Length: 272
Image (cartoon, rainbow, N blue to C red; front, side):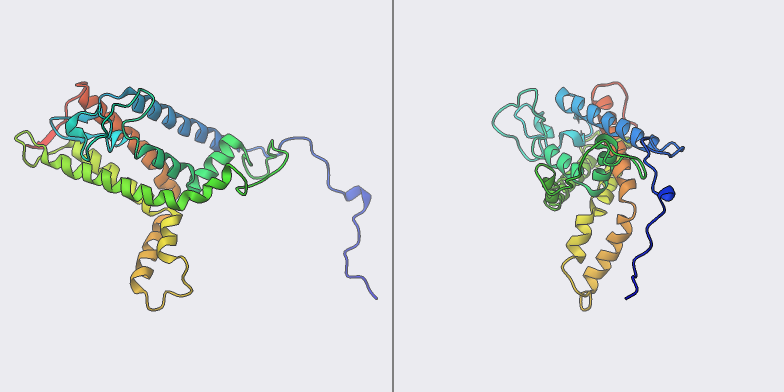
């Protein structure tokens, strides 16, 4: 019987043992490095702002920063608590938006794009293609604590609810003109821009795509679900873009509200 196995390689052609981390000569480290800087900057800024517990509400125009929405501590300015407050004041280490920020952080932390981002940058598993990682073995997301990544689909529902709250905040701010009626200022445009971009990030989520298209063998007889699935699929191709843009717009929106609330800048009014 003739063997079908390939002949063994000659000793001189065996694979070389390379001790270098990689033979790549391009700047393969730049992407992970920028990711570390970007995510760290956002986390530091966000931590400082939620612990500041000040300059989150502009009473004259009804601007509420998304970092404090919904404001549920008894310490909240009454007008900023659109959904009421708990009967006690929070200590300094608890955010006023206790019912939203943890879920939003977990939604982003378990996001499919952010997993890739921090796995490659912070955890270096791997840092880049053809680059040796520093870990001796790979366990994936099958063990604690990374098995918790599978909860992403549930955090998605929480993110939808919080996006509705942010939308409500933005709409409510339109009725805080100088005379108590309808008004529009630069801050309103900032709030609505942030809300629209947050919806683009939330709806482009892989879990959202699965909600409308998962568990189906065929879209036949379901034209509405197919139409929604195709639109969400188009958004999904830019999920990474929305992920980064919304980090920036969240910071800019919060910073704008903080500066107006602190009296550092004035809010230009378009009318009223």
